[in-house]
Image (cartoon, rainbow, N blue to C red; front, side, top):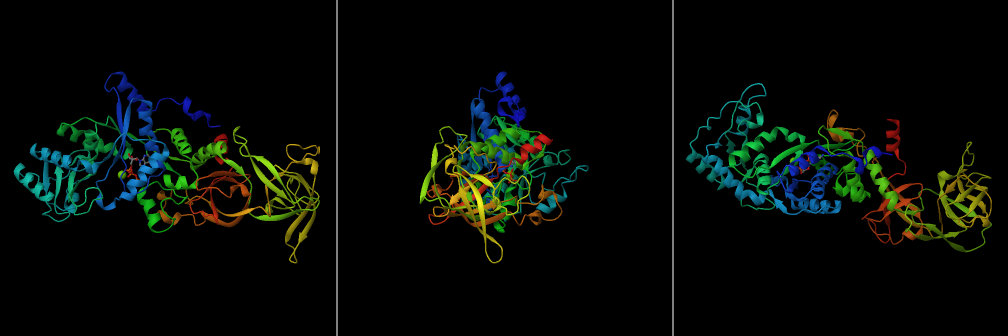
Length: 558
Ligand code: ATP
Ligand code: MG
């Protein structure tokens, strides 16, 4: 299964090839990468790819990875996001060398801007953003020079300082690089380097009212940190020319930008801006809603860091964008949970079974915690004359080859005895309220001498001993594979049935002291995790993923 993409066997990705070459020919002795999130939302599964890539490279090769907050947009950013990002990277299992903020470099960037002005390579433009856009030209037509392009250096220096001092209102002026308004790359047509924004910044407070643009902060921050391989997503390919131009003209450390394909997953959206809308408009219960593709949502859903790292490793690094099947993510978590989850019995929709020949009060049975784990041990399960089984595990008039419970038929109760259905009890409306059975005392699991073979094994709980819990079942957040590729607003494609709550299920008592984050396989049901909403009075479980491996089937078919 999936062997073709197993880690041990995969060949070097294109970045590893570049790095191995750089190390071999002595260009670098060690490498520096960085993960540069903008703190304007929570990290999502797409970011996990970038994290695993950047940190993974410096685990494999000598060097280190920095965490850098790309915080040049004061209005959309917040320390809540900074904190969540750090928590998520740690949880994924990575450790950064230095924690930096682009805003730490605002003084240096300001000096860099002055250097460009002095070299005659930047000017203050009094044009409005509309005027600048109108002069930009099109991919096939050159742009027009701004009337302010020829300003003398001294005037530019003075105006830029006054911009910094807060003398001008928002949007009234910008600092632009002086490159070429006819450049074939539109981003090289005198790009804006600084804009005026009288906004409070979460790191620098009210110190600044001019803020550098992404292009004048990112590459310079890379350079200041002496990042060797600056890895970003493909939409930044056209920015590379400007990245290199600025480094060359400023005569600073030559970091290099490399691009890989953004990862998108079907039936969800991976854009912080869109995820923020879902949160703000209350389509979901916060950033960590278990339906969200955020790291915190996946964590609350019961995903393990190992499974997310495995997923990122399997999808690898690509140069062309593609949509990844969410089934692969589910496959990865199912594989891991199978190895680590404790097995427990939980009945969702109970039907009472009375064992008429069981004379004991109760008895303690033992069952394996996890057949996949030799050290897993066993747990105690109380058995008594009154049990619950799943209503769907009984049929009064069964079809052929029905191996569950039916009048006259025998089944095994998991880790307990074989029982035989003797009588069906109904209410006045004809609804089955109880099933009366006999049990075979010699058929006890582990010491079965009955010689009887049955095909069906059912999960069950003892009525008197069961504890109740709430279970939350999740489905895809969106009804279509790519909600952003459809007509109209992406939110029109939300799946209104993505959450189903079962307020009262019956669980074996061994889970009474479960704590948030504990993971279980509910036998025959799927993988579940105890949610943080749980209290001592009410346990709440989230379904992480079902038992059935739809993805593997797809792979075989394909
Ligand atoms: P979003 O659109 O969700 O805000 P972003 O690219 O603006 O994404 P950043 O905070 O700037 O978010 O991203 C930090 C890093 O993560 C960047 O290097 C970016 O290229 C990378 N990244 C973001 N989304 C993805 C994705 N879907 N797949 C791979 N890498 C991603
Ligand atoms: Mg961004």
